[in-house]
Image 1 (tube, rainbow, N blue to C red):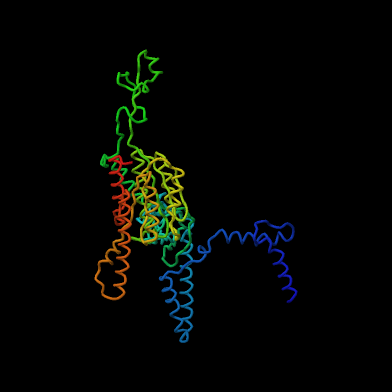
Image 2 (image 1 turned 135 degrees about the horizontal axis):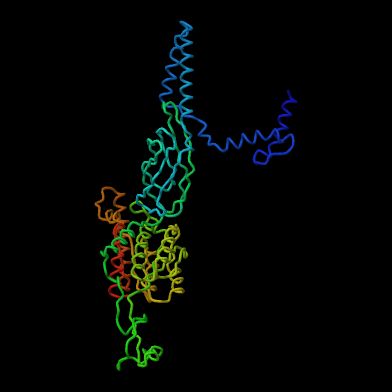
Length: 488
């Protein structure tokens, strides 16, 4: 007995190096190892779930009926034989049902989802299940959704028509921006007798990129096409004789500046020809995003940074549509993202991609360092739109000083998110000591915030301080007003 065990152990040791590799050894050992390796590869090629049928309640009931005569087996052997016949019949029916049930992996399944998902809003996902067989199938489907998504009805029971395709729709609501992955699609296919069902998965892993809310951008694009957009700053302001953009050639007038003469055109036409230029009301817009700890608090299911990013995306789209140069700077304790100001649709796509990557941090922001970085790279006067938050006295003092210095050679618009709950706590009549403490703290924060905003306004900084649901509209309106007044 010990010699047999020793031989088996020696064979295991000999074949162990080949079990993790498809390479088959040569010689006598290869003839022994080949069937083992083929069995292993066959087992790995099939999902273990496909090999385990799941009994349905109907099968369990039939099994219970078949076992009932055994209770009378002590009275007569006839009941034992009857029970055996019934058991064999149930097993045969289950085997037929299993045989007639297709493997889930043989069904064509695909997932249709938008390539650009929006954060905080429902995004439609569609599963398409085909049936290449001659009879209809009843299928239970479940999708593997990223953990950062809120889902409604990711699983469903559907009847797939023979030779056709069935679609299952559900929606996901991403809670964070970034790159995520959908997993496989899990299926359970029921047999024609509903005695068993086969379960398995279909490989459908796919990348999902979550961007800021793109719905407002699409709606604004539709309004532009219909001519419903507000016209402030929509077109160039053509003021003859100024600026540096070529407008036209015309005959030279006695009161024209001699420097405006085009000598090349004059030589061709044989008379003095002047060049006329036009001025533009295009400007440079810099979007500054504070990604520090003060932007990590949540309002309406999204962080303050997420609300700011949504507004920044819309602002970038409107500014690009109006011909402005748009740039982006994301910062916390250091510069996290920077996009050089440029015009055009490609610039909007660059900014969109950068906004997808910006994430909130738990570090204290350093606006002074970020603005010094900006001044070293953008000397031209710009409209700087800063999304930030004011909470503590010390943080507000440092931010006000940095913004004041930035406003020395830029037009600054500071956008903040007002917290309605904080105002409610500050005005609520306290019913306990804890509520009184909460009211005092809330009022202290609001007072510090009001002093900081008053200081910013006194130093020429424009301020938007509204709740989250109004931030986008208020920011775009203020941008259009400033553009119309040509303050930039």
